[in-house]
Length: 126
Image (tube, rainbow, N blue to C red):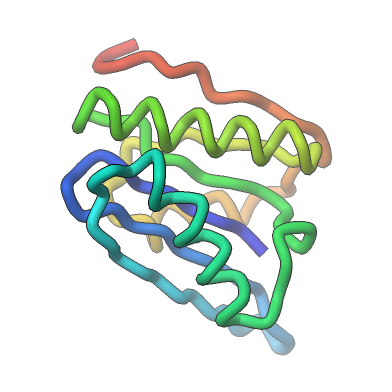
């Protein structure tokens, strides 16, 4: 299962991607007001996971939108992604793709590493 996070705008998005049997895929995307994102993001992630009867321990990777967008929102999203990745010992992938489904599909097609790889919060071009 892969979690995707986009906190760049006033309407934050999280997405849960799961590979199913027979090559099928399931994606669930939730949008929620990002004010204040520092208080709503983890609660939204927890609610999404519970709605799918799964836990955070089932995550194999995290995808996080790195901008452009709200300076504070991006920092919170990237920090949460890094903290979860570090704790769970799973990779964190940055993306500039606003369509989370496309970003996750691209990453899911790869052979995912089994170690934590942080995203550095660099705003703008790099």
